[in-house]
Image 1 (cartoon, rainbow, N blue to C red):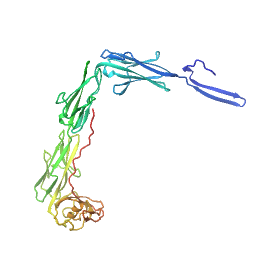
Image 2 (spheres, rainbow, N blue to C red):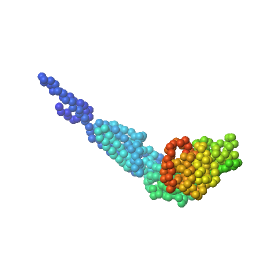
Image 3 (cartoon, rainbow, N blue to C red):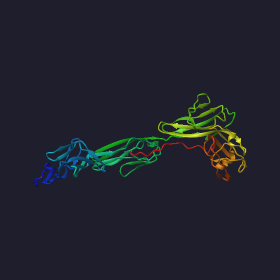
Image 4 (spheres, rainbow, N blue to C red):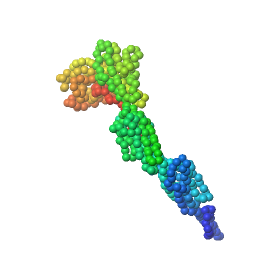
Amino acid sequence: MEILNVKYSDSMTFQCRAHNIFGTVEKYIKLIVTDKVTALVSPSQPSVIGGPTTNIDIVCSWTGTPPPNVTWSHILPGGKTIPVTAGTTLSANTNTSTLHVTGAGALDSGLYQCTVTNGLETQTSTANLTVQSKPGILTGPLTQTVQAGQTIVLRCDVVATPPASVVWTYPHTGTAPPKDVLVNPDGSITIQNINDFNQGTYTCSATNGLGTTTATGQVNVISPVTVSVTPNELPVHAGDTFTQITCSGTGDPNPTLTWTNENGVPVTSSGGKFLLLGNGGLIITNVDPDSDSGVYICTGNNGKETATAQTIVYHDLGALSCTTTFADCSTNIGRACGGYCPGNCGTQGGAVYGYKQYTLQSVVCLSARHSGTTGNDVIWQIKQGGNTFEGKLSNGILSQYSGPLAETAQIWEGPTGPARPANAPVLG
């Protein structure tokens, strides 16, 4: 079978059948008729003077069988590609697709790409359009909130024909860059080690012979929350009518200060035992060296972040003996004690069980040397037990092994630092 003057409508499946007295054999042949896909884009005017009444038609002429689909994209100066989904008309009679640009401005400059595909093959064609007008700003400075000490970049990405110059206006210095601001070759600025002086409105102005375009952004600077407690270690004695801890916090905005114990239970003024001062101070009245001892935590929160600091209030036993054990002061979990070890307890006094965490029957001064405590002052806290107490040679002292117990003595090594959330630099 021969088909003359093949057309797209001839695409179909043909059946060939052969038959004799012994039977029938069939063969199916699928015929697909195509025509080469082509695409050609040409703007009506490759370079125009922009303005509200400037309208441009960019035409894509195409061929192809089966009839192809036509899509458009705009490749901006700098390389960013944006699909064009509006402002196009398709004419099947003339095999053209027209993209209409109305009120052309600087941001309409760039490459326009027509993509023609029929599922079998794809062709693209581009045309460049240059709009002479006042500058357009692709990306201006973004309004943002950053922490003090960060380094940020504010952008001013400009499209302009003729070329434009970029000038920045700063919150407190006009057009003069502050000493901590770098003006980059691409027109952006870098603010290093940002502080309160850098807070305010930033304006980038792009100017050429046809006009000026501006973009503004607000930079808000917040100071990280910090909290400190004084003193870090507070001795108390039987008969003390009161003792006081001071907590101070900084931040932007200023943090609210609250107190808890190490288990997270709030410390409040109810009952008269504790007095909370408006400046973050905490007063403990009618001091009980046992029940009032322990770790106290001050927390600062300004609604954006949180920081903490802590102190240990401990029953001051004064001068200890070489045989004083941890249990001699208290066996209540959470309680804290401290004292001064005489200088002759380096190798005598009794047994030591564990390492860093000791049984309550371990002698204090030898345990302190075993753990690496410097000086003769030692503070410890009774903690929840359950651990196996490790026997270990440390600092010339051999401790012994002990199985799990309900309580453990942990030598105080100082408070932990304030907790702060991590923050990444912001670009905009």
